Image (cartoon, rainbow, N blue to C red; front, side, top):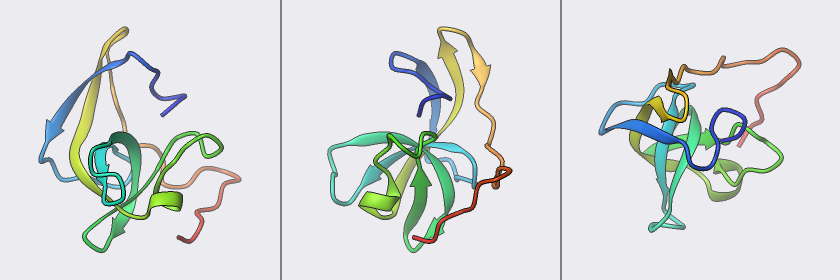
Length: 100
């Protein structure tokens, strides 16, 4: 989730919370049921969510693994510097949303 988060960051996660597009979410993949990942929610997709990493060139996300099941929504980074995780803009200048 770089540049938003780095290895070693400690987060407050609300388990069972409803995700919205742009939220940082904790997810599980059907193809990798033992793996938890932090990704950015893009849109609801079937029974799960289409999610992306904040680094499109170095992220394994729904483009590879398909929709993910959201386990919780990350609210705050607690360590090293506390801050509230805000939803990302749904569209960024010069960036198009790809079809799945």
